[in-house]
Image (cartoon, rainbow, N blue to C red; front, side, top):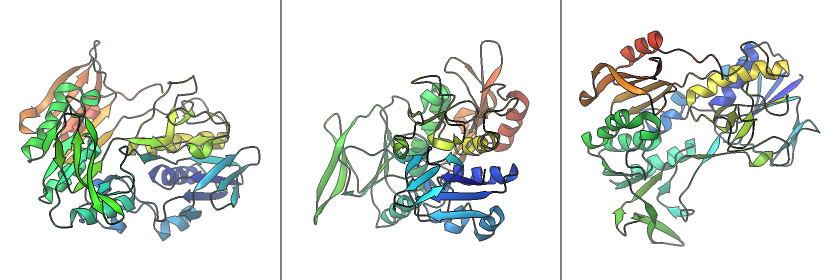
Length: 401
């Protein structure tokens, strides 16, 4: 291959560039990013960057030296409009194109928004650096009351940051117990209890009906969140953290199969052998039909997938043995001064055993055990060292994708 084009400039795209060079690819390597900023890490956007304790240099993924070492043709603020496999090119939104022999789809996703929130001042999502900058300015404007829609990790991290800034925070979530579908009720309860411990008003089983707004010049400004029971939570700033939608619209007409992400085989290869997908946009193992496969919105998965995808792109197929994605399932979150860590792939039916510490104390390690006594997952709160030991000794890495 003379040219490989990576479409997407976040961690999945950067890790793919590194993986391709590490695998020996010495041809032209183009990295397209629709963000005008140099590639940056997203996890700090809800934490250290949001509160101002980390600057842009601290979250950057590529500096000038990295770019030179990777020999990248880095193009920022450029959106891909269309993939033309027959013509061997990626068509850009400005009408130009990049002739290419191979493509890495790493376009991630866009934050979902509340219906009717477009153009309303004071309503924020948190996906990009510009999102974080806008939210950071809003949080520093006096002492705003903050309402967060969504009690997942992003919502919890923003709540934690806002409380550390001394702000009044309400978290609204539709589930009776946020995080329970992922962690199960016992572990989820320990995470949810952190909110009350630190003065966050968490309201589970809450339906959001809309936004309360007032005129603000030619626009409107939010003053609260209207709930399904007819009440309103007053808020000067509303943060919406209800997931993402994979960025696949530019692939319409390309021949690639799309189903809540770009469908790939277990080796991250699409129906076209010279096109692979990685990161939040990839639905791996999803070529068997609608609804099949998995899509992981995890920082760790992006790097793990990149190495596999790079090898198979250069090989022109999903090779054997070893060239399939075997996810570690590792996820972490920082909330209220505690490190929360998860590894593995537990089932809701698995039994939870506390290995060390006490959940009531906010510092413990637990494992999930299946019916055969096999450890399927490990969770740690506030004890990274012990979590690491248990993970290494008790958790088996998957042997198949």
